[in-house]
Structure formats: C-alpha cells, structure tokens
Length: 172
Image 1 (cartoon, rainbow, N blue to C red):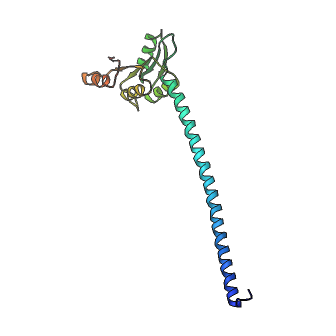
Image 2: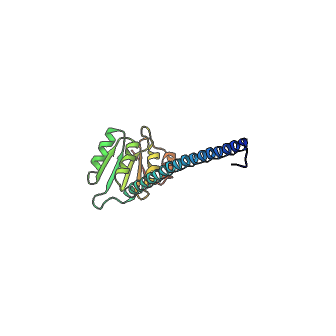
C-alpha cells in the first residue's frame, strides 16, 4: 500500500468489494438453482413412482378382465333395459351364472370387476348403445363372446351387429 496513493487504494478496495459481491450473488444463484434442482428431481421421482403405480394397477385390472372366468357354470352378463325381457332372459338362462345390468355403462363396470364367457346385450340401450358395449367388450376381453339382441330387426341392423365381431344377432 505504501507505493499507492489513497485514491488507488480506495479503487482497489472497491474492486475487491465488487468482486466479493459478485461472488456472493453467484453463490446465492447457485444455491437457489441447487434447491430448484432438488425440488425438480423430487417432483420427477414422485411422477415416475405414480406412473409405475398406475401401470401396475392397469396391468392387474387388464389381467383380471382378460383372464378367462373360472371353470364351472358359464358366466353370462345380460345387458337389457326392458324389465320384461330382462326377467325372461334370467329365467331361460337359469343354469348359468348370470350378472344382469340395465345399461351399457354398468355392463362395462361389471366387465372390469369380473370376467364373462358371454355378454348378451340389447342393441338399443339408454346412453351407451349395445354396439358400443360390444366394441368395449371386445377391446377389454377379446375372448368373450357377445350376442346382440334386438326387438327392431332389419338385415342392415343384423349386419352392423355382426361386423364388429358379434357371435350372433337374435331378433326378439
């Protein structure tokens, strides 16, 4: 310091202070980036864990739906919104294990819960149609046979029912 003037010393100290402040700002920025990186990694890990959990649940449900029903009496799902026809089908099919529902949405829910050998569905249902039920059944459980029944018969309706792989189309 002896060879420097007072102004030169002050300038040098100010440069040191400025460098020190810059280093502190850079350190603060690095600490914030580190914290953000940790939070980001925690979020990514949580998302990956959630994805794995969902994949495992989907695989379990898919195995459950795709697995053939247990041996023994045939397991049938009847989807019919007319109470009279519904009761007749239940009486005619008494030798089989029957689950019956009144609409397509309930049919798909039942299929998720339990595998069926055969699904018997009315073509004209409230909400989801019988054709839509058949398509969903074939996607979820390709081995399950679907029989379409209808009170409004035409060759065109029968052909449309058989196109998406209905096992049969029966006129009431």
